[in-house]
Each structure stands twice: as C-alpha cells, then as structure tokens.
Length: 314
Length: 231
View 1 (spheres, each protein chain N blue to C red):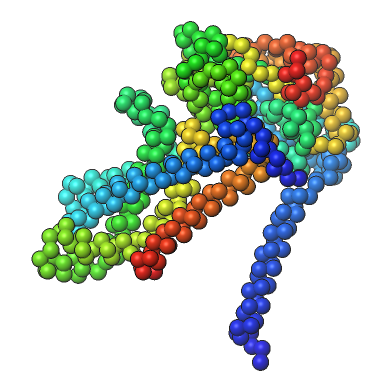
View 2 (spheres, rainbow over the protein chains, first blue to last red; view 1 turned 60 degrees about the vertical axis):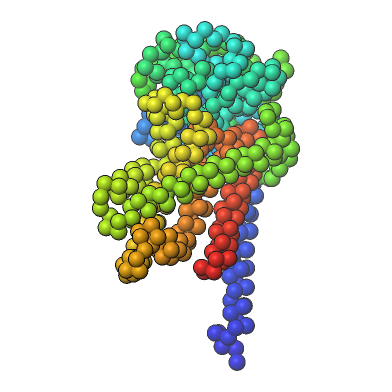
C-alpha cells in the first residue's frame, strides 16, 4: 500500500525537492566558477557584435549624454580599437553598450558580458590577477579641491578639517593611509557619488574634496561658479587608468595595445586628449582645462601596461 | 572565477588593522543605526498611533496632526528623507549642523518607521471588535484605563507579526545610512570591494551578516511572542 498520500512518500517527495534545490544551487555556483573562453576575436566574430563596457559618469573618460549615447576619451579610444578588431575579424561588428559600475565591472569582463571595458578603471596588481589592461593612455593624479577663498594649499593644512571623498573609490583608502602615516587627523565624510561629495564642498560641510584630478576639474567646470573653487596641494597618488579586457587573450589585447601605441606615436592620442580635457565638451560645453601631466606624457612616449604599483616605486 | 578570502587579513591602512575587523566594526554601526532607530520608531510610532485612535473616531486636531505625520513620513522615499535630514535641514535650522551624520540617519530611519508603526497600531485598533471599547467604558474605565487594561494588550497581540517584519525591515533599511557617510555594512561593502577587488566575496559576507541579523531579530520577536503565549 504505497499511496502517494502516505507519510513515507511524503518524506520522499520532500527529499526530492531538497535535491532539486541543491542541484539548482550547484548549477548557480558552477556557472560562476566557469571560466569564460578567452578567445574574444572568435567570440565577437561568431556573434557579429562586441560589447563595450561604459560608465554613466566617469568625468571626461566615459560618460552618458542620455538616450543610450555614451562618449568620452576612453570611449572614443575604444571605437578606434574596435575599428581595428573589425579589420582583424573581417566583418562589421555591431557595438553594444553595457553600463558598468565600479562594483560589477570586473565580474562582467570576466564572465564575458563585456568584451572591452572603456571606463575609468585603475590598473593595479590585484586586478591584474583577474583581468588584463591595455596600454595606458591616461594617468590620473589624485588631488584636493578646495574653495578658492579657503587659504588651504596643502594636505597638512587639513588637520581638524572635514575632508570629503566618494564611497567606493581608492581615494578613501589613500586618505586613510595619509592620515595614519602623517599623523594628521581630519574628519572623513563620504559622499555617495562624486556629485554628492562636491555638494558637501560647495555647501561648506566639507573643507576639501580629495579625488581624481579630472573628476575634480569636471565638477568644478559644471558648478555654478567655477572661479569659487581651485585644485591645490600635492599629488596624493598617481594611478594609470586603462581599458580593461579579459585575461589570457593575447591576440585581442595586441590589437588594442597596437592601436593605442600607433595613435600615441602619430600624435592622434595627444589630439584626442586635447579634445576631451582642454576643449569644450558636451553636454554643456564645459572645459576641464586639465593639461596632460608628466606621467601621461611618459605613457604616450613609451606605451606600457604597468600597474599603479610601478608608478609608486619611482 | 576563483575565491580569494585572504584579503580579510590584509591591512586597510586605517583605524581597523584588518579587513575582517573593519567588517565587524561596520556590522556594529549597522546594529547601532538599526537599534537606535528602532527605539525612536517604537516610541514615536506607538505615541502617534495612540493619538490617532484615542477618541475612536479619527477626528479632532490631535488626530489630524497624527494623520499628517503618518502621511508625511510614509509618502516620501526613505533615501530622500535621509538627504533632507542631512543636506536640507541643516541649511534651514543651523542647530542641525552640530548633529553627526549618525544621529541624522537614526532620526531619518526612525521617524520613517514610526509612521509605519503608527499605522500598525491604528489597524490593530481597527481589528478589535467595536464592543471592546464600549464595554470598557461601560465598566466605568477612563479612556486611559481602557487602553491600558483592555485595548492595548489585544492590539499588541494583533500587531506583533507586522511589528516583527517592521523590525526586520529596519535592519535592512539601515543600509541607506551609507549615503550620509555612516561607515556601516553597505559603506564597507562598497569601499572594501573597490580596495580589494574581491567584490563577490565582500558582498557575500555582507549579505550573510544582514540575513543573520534580520533572522536574529525575527527569532527574538517570535521568542517574545512565544514566551507571552501569543502565538
């Protein structure tokens, strides 16, 4: 008498469900653990499309104009690379945009959702364990923005002051390390995004905003009265910002590296830089007026994909 | 991808000597924000709920004010309220400039939740048979006495399950405090994943701690109900 309503079969039923759930769980972990095949050229050729990772608002490097239009220095550079990828695979590729955040950009490149990430990712040794970076086309300097009338000229003057920076950026860590190393005590305030951090500076809640130079320049350029703010003080850190691709895919990386090296050599890269960091840019025609720094010029002169750690040793 | 947990023993270079110690300090901030906000919410919410139901007809200026309170706090998104407390209020009332972001976040989350608790008190009252209030009055009890001895003990029982979810919600809602620079779990997650590039590991840990905390709150609330033999 093994009617399906009998208690023993209920138990069996229950066990079945447990095993289904367990199996589903294993599938989920399995797909995370699965390594994406790293032949990007074959993948984009087969798909007829390539996915570019872009940012919503990463200063002039990568940002949106709304309506699914993405632009910026790195985006334009990626377009040049994709043109060469098209030559290599011998067909026209559809370019798809995928917005990424600093939280998801690495996993999305690793799992194949994004083929080439053109945002504002710092090339460092930890990340090089998981992904690869193309030749550096832009080297960022972390600086301090203050109100022009504040009289603050160096980080030492920030003792006891409120210093804003943005949650989820390496500047936070940098500030902490400085605080400990120099014995300076200041109150850190974390803005939830760059606009929020800048608002803290603008409203007087913070006395300084520590962040990547181009982001400071961008926020100042867009503020109500740019003359009220200045970028000041020492360079707190130097970080190569680079285009990110999958690891262990030398053929694809070579096309990107060669494109950047060729553009650096021909002077096209300097022109591109001028277009985005010196001239008026959309949407509001603001000018960042951020001349290329020494490290950026060196990266153009001898193209390389060295991580941030290599810059700090100098 | 492969797992890398060793970052937990790395030095983040700040007040905490390792990432796991920072994680636990962040958890402490989450508990502090949620715990304090819950106290604010419970006291204010029950008070507003009582004011609204005191006369039993939802009329009069006091009930009107209490209704306005509820509608004000439950019709504005929580994140917006947090920003109002943090950015706008100090502009209007300079005294709030001396409040720490922690206190402002506690006020914002606490008062937001108070509106919800006030509604639960009111619906609990609504669920009681009408005769209860009349019977208490007929026995010669004053309004205060009938609330104390007849109505509230029953309402407490009725609203307990809803209150349990609300207590669990406040743990999760405390995550908005990251937006005003309270270094709780969400801020830790956003910051540590950037510094260590171990986003999946960091978010797994933080998710686990949120789930654990909310579950503990659930266990505590059901435990209280069981002890009081309400369930």
